[in-house]
Image (cartoon, rainbow, N blue to C red; front, side, top):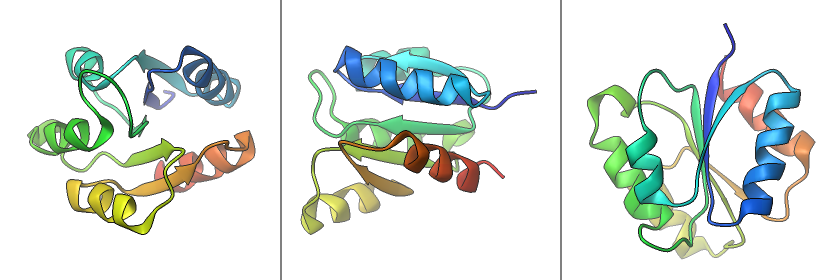
Length: 120
């Protein structure tokens, strides 16, 4: 059974690139356009979540806090995929419950390496 990964980003092109990269590697992908959309689509087992930080309606930090408050997803790895690279933003992500951080633009191999590591 393939692992399911949720990708959350307000940029359709980024969602598409993440989705294609993961699907080509054999993962199932659920796409969401922001934190609120992602929370509405949370159902069933998830192997990992990849989320942007800066999004309308609900940003990545608030989304992570909501996910961590849900017992079913409390320990699902969550990777921030964002243009933000400041230490204080990383700290906010970590405090909210982010597992890792990838700075955009990303290389597909980099994303796959993180997915393989976290989905063992």
